[in-house]
Amino acid sequence: MNNKNLKIIGERLKAAREKQKLTQVDVANGTGIAVNYYAMVERGETNLTYDKINKLYKFLKLKNTDIPL
Image (cartoon, rainbow, N blue to C red; front, side, top):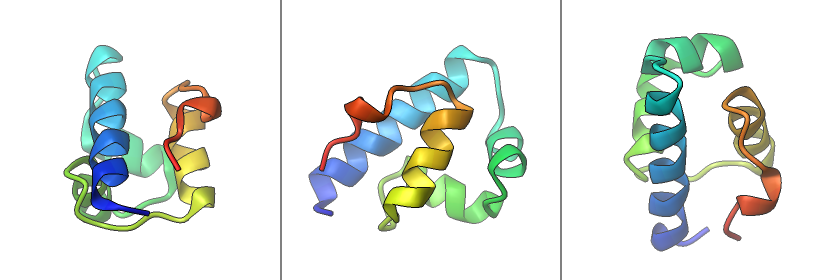
């Protein structure tokens, strides 16, 4: 996945998290992902598997069809 798409995904995840008044810890715990790793995801600094993207989108109630590939 290219850097542009990683940034887009991170921005969408952060916006959804903040809208729901959740912390990064809440999302990490709810998805079984390490907090530091999740923070890197929001910043677009790490590559993601499609499975992890789906897990995060599902937890934050985002549509999987909005995943830029």
